[in-house]
Amino acid sequence: MTTLSLTRTVRTPFGKFEFRAGRFLLHAALLTIGLIYIYPFVWMVGSAFKTPGGFFTQGISPFPSVAEGFQWDNFVQAWNGANFSRYFLNSVVITVATTFFATLFVTMAAFALARLRVRGRNLILLILGATFFLPQGYTIIPIFQIVRALGLLNTISAVIIVGIAGGQVYGTIITYGFMRSIPREVEEAAIIDGATIFQRYWYVILPMARPVVATLVMFFSMWTWNSFFIPLVFTLGRPELRTLTVGMFAFVGERSSEWTLMCAAATISLLPIVLVYIFLQRYFIEGVAGAIKA
Amino acid sequence: MAQNTQNILQRSLRKEPTEKQLARGKHSALYKNEGWVGYLFMLPTLIFVAVFVVYPVLASLYITLYNWVGVGTPTQFVGLRHYLRVAQDPWFWNAFKNTILYTLILVPIQLSLSFVMAMILNNPRLRLRTFYRTIYFLPVVTSVTIVAVVLRLMLGNFGIQISQMLGIDPPVDPIGDPRFALLTVVAFGIWQTFGYNMVCFLAALQTVPAELYEAAKIDGANSLQVALHITLPIIRPMATVILFLALLGSMNVFEQSFVLTGGGPFFASEVVGGYIYSYAFGGVGRTPNVGYASAASVFMNILILGITLAQWFFTRNLNDSKPRAKAQ
Image 1: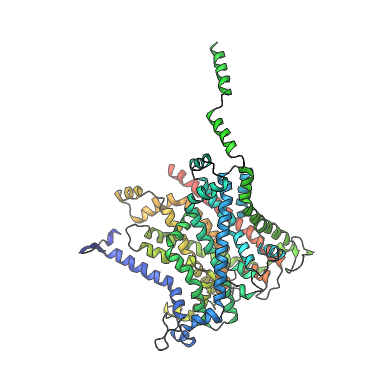
Image 2 (image 1 turned 135 degrees about the vertical axis):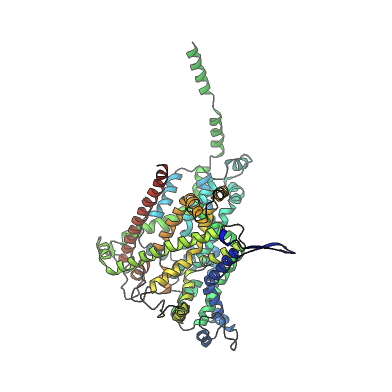
């Protein structure tokens, strides 16, 4: 860095600006790489506005041809014709329900393990930890059998229930670690005031565990929104129950030549999570960072 | 005499409840319901884990001993024959080789690049650092399936054009050419999870005290020396975790190959996840046999366990030997 200290300080009404050759090159590189990095997304959004012919003539250019203009109709067709409105609704219902119940159950279990005197706590923690390292067979098949035995095959509930189960072990372990670190005194004050166990969970520990709850909500909603395999397997018999990811995959198989519609459908599928991410990016990144520290 | 008094004193003291005992007594009265209410709080999680995590693991091991197409009850007992068949199937080893290649190319490239990027973005005086971080992390939050569909569209139709633009001569088809399909899947994998590791490294870098950097600067160390002799040794424990997770994630690769190339062409980019899927649900000309698919999965998980244990021993020895080497 010292070799590139061609510094020039410029005074402007907004304050002092420093121009440095090194910094400038660094920014140029970071911006270029960044643009290449998000190029697939840019191309996808642009191609969603192309005509089928324009898709080929414009190639990897992100812009629809000037002569043909923007084809908003692609979005209408993907939304209505290709049934993505239904897939969207399914994804929203599944994501909200899975995230809510998974977070509720995980925080309850972690509360009991971390803050209450329960016999066999170490054994339960050991079993939870061990499930990470067990050599597994193809567990989706027994899960499929259980869901069928419960009579839930080809229902939204099956996708939600299996989704909730999927996050329990990981969620409980990180939440347990966090709740363990909350000082005892805070809860003792509530106990002396005669708080019930439920009140201690709801009014004392849960609000104090807000950072870890935010991480859980972020992880669970991201996993569920993006999950592919579970909704694929449990909606094989009922196309109208597909989520956006499964709908997208099926779309490729069923209407393989309607590329511009595919791009429009992909844009519809990615837009919500990208918007949420951009507005809450701090929480996403802190969540990932927090999870690795724990 | 003095001895006696002391004994009496001790005995009387023993009868007096200590402060600790008092506290315990108070607590036991206040916490009297915690036992069964605690189990009530854990009940949903315990049921979910028992039914959808523990039972399926055990059942999937049992299935490996049977020939079974997936419907009805498995009846034809084959013992450990499925395991023998997996171990002797050249297509399994082809998929395994691809999985290992995927891991061996992806992990070193991605971890070194994301470490360097984290070092750059860790500078608090760098403008737009949040913006860059947001961009590089973006692929992590998006669905692998949908992005793979988009990339398949882009590379399938215009891949040759892109390779021409990059100056590759003769131009190559990144998805259709069996020599490059796996590399394309690897590149997709690097792109998709790069931001995740970058953020993990950024979190690790936060743990390095700023005074150390200042001290090194005063001693006249350059950036490379600082990175090698200050940053890396301090973040080593967290870097080990990052490496462990990256290896584990790469060896479980499935969707990247399944959606982008379908494992093709001619199984050139098939990974073990796809091999197992095709035996569980059919496809690519294979007859479904759930017992066999499950055996392949157990076999693969044992291999992965072996590799991660080896990695753990290796990094542990590395962590141990470093300080000793310095002390000599």
